[in-house]
Image (cartoon, helix red, strand yellow):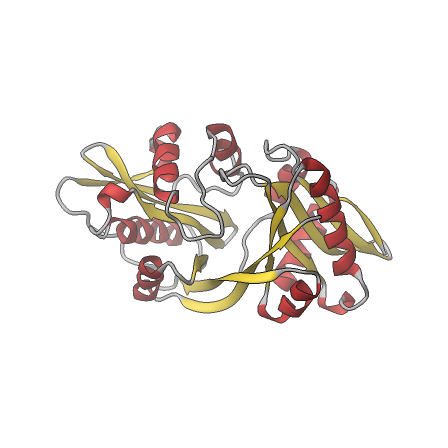
Length: 298
């Protein structure tokens, strides 16, 4: 077994591994390669892979969380090991690499994610489960009908929208998003890298709802072939209660389906009742779950 920093040429193996462990996640080879060759602007972001006989069998990324005002908080993302190579210390070695990277950067409290069957591993390493996230899928055959907006409301692909306006709507809607820490410190540079410039972002399917020229709601689509991920769907707080988030998501799904997408995936905190209700009405079915897990670093 060897733990090393992930390299751009690892992208195909990393995507194949992720598809085995998380079949409901969507990130293509080229967007993964770009992430590794041109990492996010968050200071301190890194990723590690585990190799056995020159084969990538494990992955983890780690970063100080620059999207929250909570001090000294970091994230360990998607630590996973191929099922055939578990219980041989690989997960523990990847976790040690991640925490060893974060501690010198001043991170004192960290969040990781665990599928239900991995919770014993997390607890063994000092993590406490916190919040459950539901993963859901929607078959897009037949495609959802494109919705007719009410008077005074306009549906536009984000390709036709000033990204600064979309960023402002994203920031405004995320402030009260359920989570372990508030998402209240997202810079435009970070958002631009993570969202707007992401190679997987489908700017033709992703949709904003405009009310009197203002971005009131939106639904973002990240795509890999005939699979898509509803990256974030939300309404700006002052426009909530009018069905605009559902309108945006339905339009985005319809546009994606018309361009060849056959299945859509998404995730939601189990406390996010409004979005879970929207997904249920659209026909999404649960396909998986993860728990956020928190621990203090020493």
